[in-house]
Amino acid sequence: SAWAELADATFFLSPAEPAAAQIAAMKAIATAPQSGPGRNLIRALQGRMVDYSLVAGDEAKAAESLQTMNESIAPTAIRADIEARTRRLAESFVRRAEGGGTDWLRPELAERLSGWIRRSLESAPEDADARFLAARWALVRKNGTETTAELGRAVAAGLPLEIATSFL
Image (cartoon, rainbow, N blue to C red; front, top):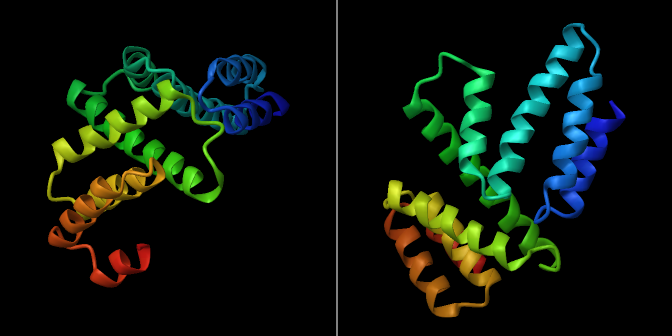
């Protein structure tokens, strides 16, 4: 659907302002055909709406959307889903910032991103990938001391040394 594509394009263009993507996604859901492919599109868009809510800083709305998508989902599963989504979003945003500037990264989104990475580290302090993500984010922010410290922690947690050294 054109509305779904507009939602994706709008979100990619300005992830710090997900409201326009949310509106386009809601229009795509409202106009999706009542068919198998239409239901698949709606399900995919509902998942994106969860991500848009997280980026907007509205975890309660994200949790509500997950509950609506699956009424029998347990609160612990909702929390785990949100943690996985915020980690995936953080990885995506860090990769984007590494690849070509941060003009799109508004201060409130950068703060949210830092919080997602911090929560990821709190829930799995010995996760080498989470530590490596934190090091990459510190480098994007030009914080050499934190980058070095997180790289050391990532290696101690099992990140292969060749990955850490190629990063420098």
